[in-house]
Amino acid sequence: MTEDRGIGKCEQNHAGSYGYPTRPQVPYPFCPQCGRPMVWACPKCGALLPEDNAELLAARFCRECGTGYFGETAAAATN
Image 1 (tube, rainbow, N blue to C red):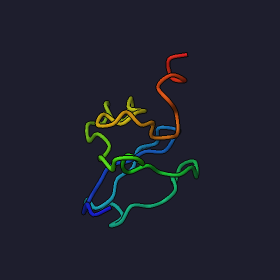
Image 2: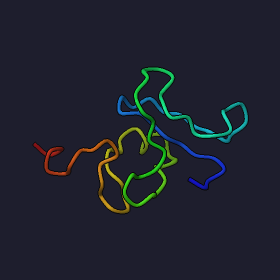
Image 3: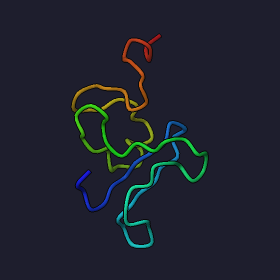
Image 4: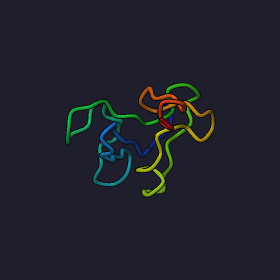
């Protein structure tokens, strides 16, 4: 990841950020609240997660390519 700052979340929807004042300077691999892996960008296309907090918390799939951030498929999400 080449971004100087970013927004991410874990599978439990705990949001995090890096590169902002008072925040870590690099992305951290695990959520400090639950210990699950953090996602900072789409695992398939590399698109960054939404910066809007409400959109970030609702997003489970990449808006650029449709890939699930946490391994979900669109078909499984609709069942």
